[in-house]
Each structure stands twice: as C-alpha cells, then as structure tokens.
Length: 313
Image (cartoon, rainbow, N blue to C red; front, side, top):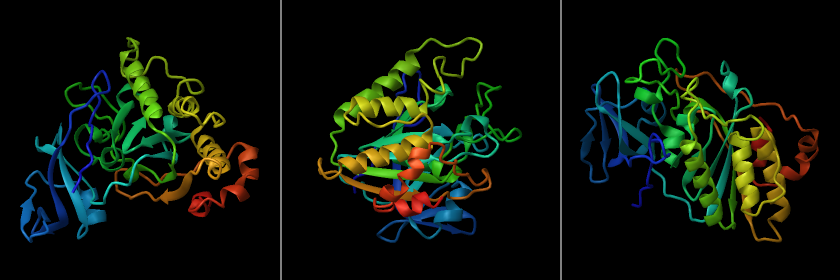
C-alpha cells in the first residue's frame, strides 16, 4: 500500500520531520492494551498508548498508524498518529476547506480556510506555528496530546513554558465541521509552488519581539488564511475567485469553478465533513453567509454534487 508522506510541526522554515510508519489494520483494545490487528491476524501492540479520541470513533475499524517525533507530555513516549486507512485519491486535484467557527475563540470567529493540493495541505494563520504544509492525516487527525493539545488548565494556546508548549492545534476533524470542495482537472504545479513560497516567506519574516509567536505581517484582509489562498488561486488561473472571509471564499470559489467546469472539463464535487466530537472541544458553528450575492447563487450552487448537504448547514 502507498502511504502518504507527512510533515509534522513546522520549524522556522516551515519544513518538518517525517513520521515513521508503524502498522495498518483493525484498531482494538483488550484489557486496556491498545493494538492494531494486521491482515495476517497478528497484533501489533501500541505500548505508547492511543489517544482516547481515536478509540471513541474508530475502535473496530481499519486505521493506519504513524509515529510522530513529538512526545506525549504525560508519558514521554512519541505520539501515535492514527487515520482511517483509505487509498489516496488520483492526482491532480485540489480541495478547498472552509472550517466552521470555534465557539470561545475570537481568532476563529469567522472560521478558517485551508487548501489541499495533491495530498499536501497548506494552512495559514496569525499564529506563526500554524503556518504549515502537512499531510492530510496530520491536518485532519493529529491527537490532542503533547504540543498539539490545549493547555490543561487554560484549555487553549499557551507557550508560557517554552519546554512544554501547548499549541492547541490537533486534528481539525476533531475540532470543527468542514465544508469541502474538490476540483479535478486543473494544473497544480504552479499553485503548489505559490503556496510553498508563501510558507517560506512567512517563516523568514523577522519576528515582532513583542509578539514572537505571531506572524508579524498577518492582516485580516490582506494577509490571512483566506486572502493568501485566494491570491494563490488567482495567480494559478482561477482569476475571478473572491472573498475576504472563509465561507465567502468557499462559496465564491464553488460558483466560479461551476461556471468553468464544462468549458475546461473540470470535475467538481462538494462534501460536508462532520466534526468527530471529542471532549477537548465543543461543537463548531457555521458562519452566516454575509455576501447577499452568494445567497442569490444558491440555486446554481446546489447543482454541484454534494453541495445540498453543505448548504444545509
């Protein structure tokens, strides 16, 4: 089986270590011992322990297991990353992700936007550490352990102890419901190059000594998770996409691609990726559609396969 390459926490250039593949098979727990049962019936024990969120949702299901370089603060063991064991989709493709708002997070009031290009997800943020290129598994399924978790008392991002930072950025599927738009038929090389350039630019930007953990040039209109992806899409050929906040860019992109799909032989599909609820986070909330033009386009958007469920949120 071909396993997706993966990138973990970004260093100062946004380049990360690759995790180690452990096993794939059926996730099990017997008398408190976690294991994966492989195709030949043998059990691969997981002495590091498996995050309880994985047990809640995937016990008895087929998963793949990778070992990340980061460590669980409670045990000192390297963190295990689990994900549904599914084949990679054919390339080239793009997926756009509107992540719903997280209650109680001012920075998430308008939601979040990310993009998947051929299995590599690019995510941009005001928080410097969250400007990353990573695998699908890491973006969606990192466990709420070690540095990926929120502070145990404050429950959110906290770096008061530089030796034990809490970045509060575990898998987005466990944090939010995600609206996804898949586009096949576009050339992706230029888009990937543009997004990697943005990651490098952000990590090479001098720090603001008063806020060293923030991206100095972040701006909610000009340099945000939405505008950086939007401008990269425009430069890569989707010149008419627009939107300043995540849900508006998602809906506008769907409309623009729907207009092009016949003339450029594009395949377009939408899906709603429901939140995998865990105790560490409340349910996310969809943002209201602010642009009345996007409301008026709803009948046309509903022709996109899968968009009915997305628009129902």
